[in-house]
Image (cartoon, rainbow, N blue to C red; front, side, top):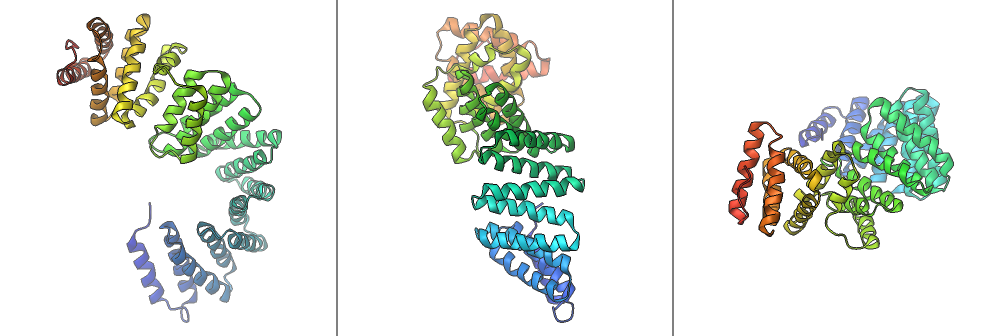
Length: 410
């Protein structure tokens, strides 16, 4: 939970209640917590002021552990302010203090943060050394999630230096530790880095498996930026393997993810430019190479792209689906069942939008094709329980009447 403004007011009141000359420890502690709250709310200047008060107050009264913690928090605030050299100095001082005091977990945290700021300063060698030391300290003290994160960052530094063989065991360790402690973001980060390593070693099959793991660990609704990155990287692996339809589909899904970072979008667009214009039926091509039990997650990712797309893009995607279903006579009913199952999962507004896009596209078809598509949808509906079947048939009939498409969906 993010701190509220009331937290700031309460801490400021506590500072006033405990003046530094009479209650130095209480005053310093309130200043430290006030600095942390300001930092969480991105008020970096205010955070630095409060943390400076806390640091100096703790130093005056000999509370060295608390002084070191305030020093480390100052480093975090300085890094947030873009003052990397000062942040580096703050972390180095904190590390020395924690080491003298025999506080290995705090030393590990400060060392990890030093690795981050040194990486910002483009020193891959020193950042790697810091992450390696942080990993060692975390692991020695049983902090497996933090040890995995440090191992992942150490491996990333090794990758930057071109040390692929040295990076691989560290990434595999980071993956295993994240899996062991149930750290989904950490697992996704390790899997993504492993995928990049496999690509660098020209193993697109292994890269594909790793990127699929990364995508699975980063749900689109919870961590869209990481999901989009995984999709864009998966597109690279698919392209390297010669699977052009898969590559195009993954790239389109990366671009179509709200919250995708600009470099990720640009990477995906460059791939689309390389592989050339698509046919619009990439999804059907991808599904044709997969057993039916694997269809649902593939279709789900694509339908979610339709939902977030502009109407023309959604309509084009619907036309591509219809063409694919019409061209897959032996699997048309299975395709329809899969599509309907995914659509049923959508919130009401998105559910209606997808059905409307399909019906608009059906309205453009010759009657024979429209009836063939309707037959597939009717067969798919019939595989669902009666309440769901009734809901879907009513929705299709209503949309057909609205958009001038043939009726007869029930």
